[in-house]
Image (tube, rainbow, N blue to C red; front, side, top):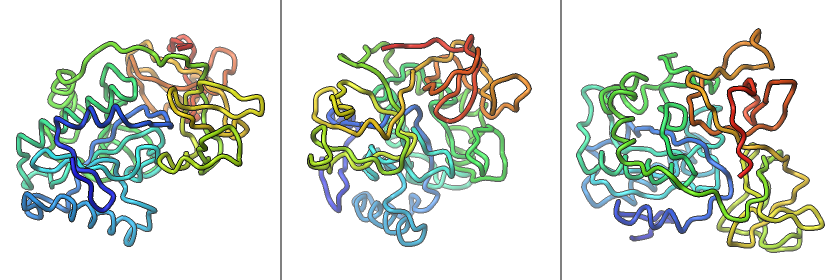
Amino acid sequence: METRYGFTKLAPSEFEGWLQSQSISRTCVRVQEHHTWKPRYSNFNGNNHFQMQRNMKRYHMNRNGWSDIGQHFSIFPDGMILTGRPLNRTPACILYANSGAICIENVGNFDAGGDTMDQAQSDSIFLCTAALLRKIGIAIPSQTNVVYHHWYDGDGRLVYYNSGQKTCPGTAFFGGNQLPDFTANFLPLLQQAMDTGGQPPRGLLSWAVVTVENLNIRTGPSSDADLANDQGPLNYGSIVRVYEISPNRWLRISQDRQLWVYGRYTRQVRPATVNTPDTNARIGPGTDHDVVQVLQQGDRVFVQKQEGSWSQTTEDHWIHGSLLDFDEG
């Protein structure tokens, strides 16, 4: 493990142990898979991980106008993993579809005729993705909790077909970038890398969604307490776990650390699990409203409002209550 330019380089054998030591205050529900397209294999000499990561950060900030590098992790051809954007910050990787996501950029051009992926990188992709899913409490991978950039339209909707957006993560990425390619080639290997089971966090009182941009995390239940600089502010729509509520409405959002946010800028939500394959999420509470997303059995959502027999998620989608199992844990 080595740190340079604010990035940490991790061998695959180090990654999950390091990840377990990280505190993620925002709740994440999916992992995004990307390829960098450029830089690609020809830019990698085996020793320039940090320089390439720094160059990507400079490009994202100076050319794209972002506040930081877009991705949380970059996986290099030799399987090494470099940290990027802090995990508590929403990525900048899929337009209008970054809330609740963790972004992986796989270094290379995996369009047909581009780079041929090394086995070390392939192994690391599955190890890293599986570890991230376990970290955020997902035991069963699916097409909605592991997503390809190519599946989204320009409005952030998960449509699964080619809508003229990027080919990312590549037309030859594990057999292709289409949903049938993912189902036939990527998903079985990821399932092999996953361990089932897991226990709910101890002492959990409730869940909440952040309702403002840049909600500060502090080291005590007061605006006078120091900022938790290693956590950074939470973005609008971030989901947090609540372990304690102070008399003055501050919420402790860490199981074992003093990390607090002001409850006035949150709204309580209820976690639920989709219990049926191919579940339609709609723009309104009724079957006469358009479908905006199709969820799969086992997917986690957070419900902020109920209207009759319909539940509204924090993404402003509506799902019939019979298709959800609510989890109070």
